[in-house]
Length: 494
Length: 135
Image (cartoon, rainbow over all chains, first blue to last red; front, side, top):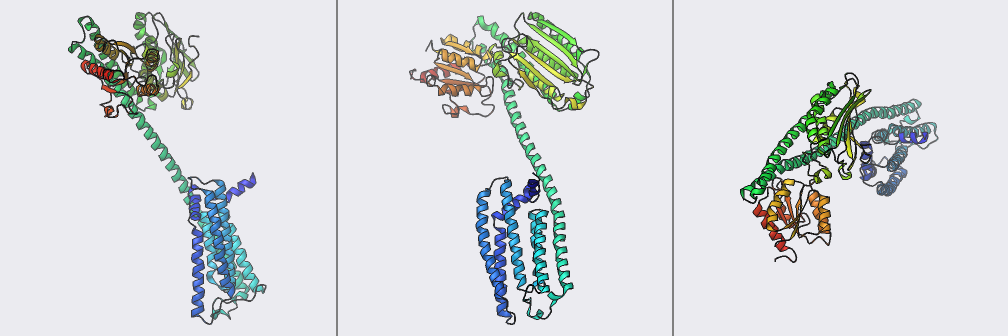
């Protein structure tokens, strides 16, 4: 495991860096640069041969350049194989990244070896082209990692030191001067010059690695921040598109729901005007028209209520200290006449203790409970029962509205709280309703940081329980809660 | 023309009532349904000569889905369907252009509010066009 971790340190970090490396391999950047170097070196050798008759380079230089060209062909073939395996997807697989890193390191190490061979036959440490060692360290730091850069740096230093010390001690001979004029300089035999040259290269190698790493790590940080910002932006974009789609759907449904009563009124009124309706049916049609007008008014009122509770104002609930018993009592009293008219037994019980205050806006809570009690009475047949209960448990207050009415059909449970959604059982029974009541309840409870639990069974009744935070509950205790449907099959009347 | 069986599927009781007031005096036999599943059952139990179908039932496209299902069923695909909606024109949806296509699997499209003469005309036209009808 430790081995794997240390190996991962050798791999380039950050999507941007890895993608640049992969793109450079894909576009044969190193190979193209090497062709340029091969051609440039060959051209220089020809120019020297033509223009400087006094300077005759050993054939080993031309041979080394030829070998570099041959090896470049090999790199081309290997690179193509890697590209086939690498694919062109958005993310780079760790295996591909590992192969690309090893491939890049191998090319650099061979390049450094060839640079040293060419230096060997063109003046050794007297040749100022030793500066090219630094290019490799720079590229390794920028494209790979500091560890790779140090690896290349030590390799360059080792090659250069062996060349410098070998020529100085006489292990490597003969010495080929860089220029004809330097044939007598013998600097390569001067220990001070040798040590100074090796020291300067070492400082150059490690200095380049350090400064480049410092700069590139800051760029990496910036890249990370940009990447996160970009991701957040994309998430926001998706959320906005989703919101717009939902709003559009909502508008479509709202338009339909509002136009429905008006179209009904116009259709029925048209029947009277066109004398399609006989005298015996006239009263019934007029009653329907009046009732339809009332429905339209209720619809618009609930739409306005939904718009009010949808206004994002979480502080409105956090700062509230609504006396639950008082609100429930008010709602139950307001429905007692309707319940009596339908011969429904409306029962009310509290287990709240002294001064139970909920962190939910008083008017919004009243709207929620009114909607639930209204639904319970509406969907419970004559002679049925509706229970309104409230209890307290440490940091939450549970308010439940239960009935033994028609219940919710299984196929209606998924989008129960969606605006304008009406259950098939309610539609089949032709019970009028705006379909906005439960949407209002969900909006208020979620904004207040509470949750809704629903238990229902078709034909047996429903129980809606609102679990709301108390006034003194810590904010953390009410976070992350969601509307959930517990079970639609367990009978609430049990 | 009298005696033909028509199934009306609309969640709006007033529309069902209005259609009944328009069509019953003309002698049609009507079955009124308020939900998609109820309508499907009624159609399968006693296949009608014509279906009057609201597009937006429990969900905004339930009427369409029901029509697709009926047109896929060999035994029922020949029954003409007249679709009804309150929002087609408002939303700029020209269903008439797509009538009979796979997008709008219906023979006729009517916008609410409904007028008696328009409904009666559309019903008799659709019944006449069906296989074995008046044409």
